[in-house]
Image (cartoon, rainbow, N blue to C red):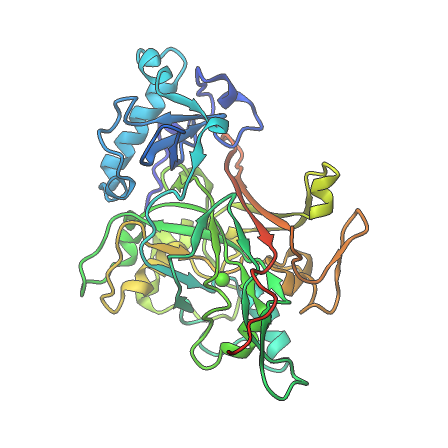
Length: 430
Ligand code: CA
């Protein structure tokens, strides 16, 4: 596990990039998350590291000689850590490389931030037992949690082509739905559009097809994590999901934040993995001492909603829920070990969604389906508006940060997406 706390985490470190020293900045010198950016004149993406309100062009700073993020993600953990060390040293107050690095800085506000890497295969898990139980209760009041839940990290293979960068809008999907009182289904715009608060885990080092990854080395294969919104069409989902799981209700858009916070940066923010008393211990291939002691990540998560009206009135939006990744039922290492136990090969740039991260309390639901109890109890916003489901013009912004006594707070930036009206109201057969 990447639990090494070193000089790059020293809370006393200050950068000559002044904005990085603001206590409210998500990107102090202790963070150094990786992403891809391009300026107006750039034909291709460049690899950058966020520092304060700037982005450091790693090739221009002579830290690396490539613009291929997926290649960089494949680095051995010790090489990756040496790159982190070099960036940290160059950005520190008093660095001899200040002039070279300074020439490689661009204001984040003046560049386009893209997807952090080329996304390969995408798998979505279901790791919040609180989410699984609340949703299960709506579907099966007497039997909310299916018997495999506490033994298998449940997941399905999703679609990578429709994963979009933060800031990009998407159209309300059209699909086939059937209400309980309808005899036959109909086609039309989704009426129960929802978001899902998730962590996105980005795979770095690949494994060979046929060879599984053990718990002990699982995190060596993880490059970093970001914020992920798995937009969901609940009415389409309800009609299509049995027996093979979600399909068109999930693959019209998913939004990923631009910055990958590395597992190295997250070393001070680890937490024990434990289960409630009476729950079964996982099978051996999903257990390790390191996982029990520090397998979880202490990441505070927030969901903000900005309606069209709020935007027009200059209102920044309202926080509608909070949870913590620490409360997930399965850890990142367990997801890697389980995904590969059959020999399935992971590749650099593969993405795991954690599944909706809801906390233990009802107001900590990570989706509207939970907060509005399946649409039955609309959410009351402070400006008088209500929401059971997302409306056209609504923006959802996910935020995340880590704080721990004795360390500098680090953040994830934001993961933002806005709902546009459906492309057409109805499509009729010719
Ligand atoms: Ca999901």
